[in-house]
Image 1 (cartoon, rainbow, N blue to C red):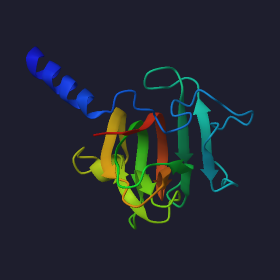
Image 2 (cartoon, one colour; image 1 turned 90 degrees about the vertical axis):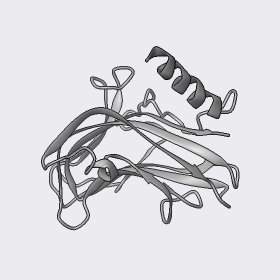
Image 3 (cartoon, helix red, strand yellow; image 1 turned 45 degrees about the horizontal axis):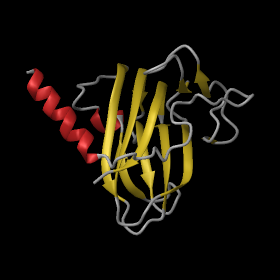
Length: 189
């Protein structure tokens, strides 16, 4: 068993380019603005509805004590944290990773979800890749309300013609809280 784990770790590490730089700024949410929001991230919408919160939680993190928490008090809200205009090389393979924890998530019947959206042209208008708990919900055998501990979500994608991508981590018509930590985007072989 130890040989298999060692082989898997070595194989996955060899896919990363030597010295691959994390293209996400403040992916560990260590930098916090005076208003409690994470530096280098944009909260959408700018004016949050009553009870909706996006803030750095200094008591819950994946590898440390800190993460960003997104809370929707009702299924009627769409709340997200974005990082736009992330420079990438065209026609290049990238790996995106994030750790997410969820508590008391309940989806609306229409299309609610907790997801990560990677968009083309430095924005979040058209998808390049998707990942996150909403896409894995059936595998998790989740029933509303559902909760889960820290889970890693990854997706590998080709940047195609894009010279920049946008990243959005969101609760879409979903009630509950997600915590997000250790966000990473690196070039791979």
